[in-house]
Image 1 (cartoon, helix red, strand yellow):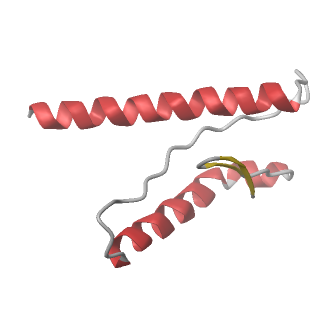
Image 2 (image 1 turned 45 degrees about the vertical axis):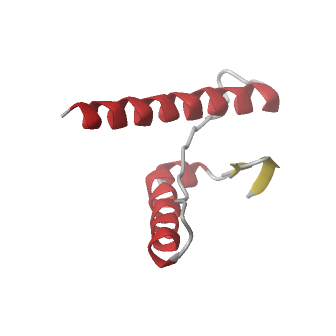
Image 3 (image 1 turned 90 degrees about the vertical axis):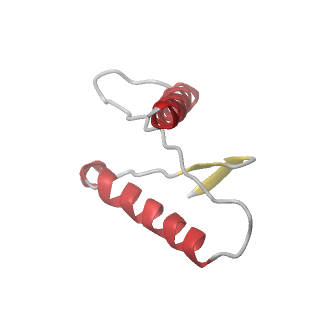
Amino acid sequence: VARLGGDEFVILCTDNSALGNQETILNRLRENIDKANRLATRQYRLSLSVGVGRYEHQTPCSIDELLHRADQAMYKNKEDKKARRQDGYKQ
């Protein structure tokens, strides 16, 4: 785990089997954030938006390109969450 900047972090999985555990890793992150929100007395809630960039040996790319792909996926995740919240308010 490394802090990329601001509130962005990178988790690097170098073992292909870790990719299969992607949902497990994400679920643990979500569970820990939910727990922190339940236990906290602050007036704000922590949230998590995730983007995954996967390196394919058949189509090599630079680390910058890999991070760019993950960043694009993260912003799509944020937009999807925003759309779901707006749909929920209309009901």
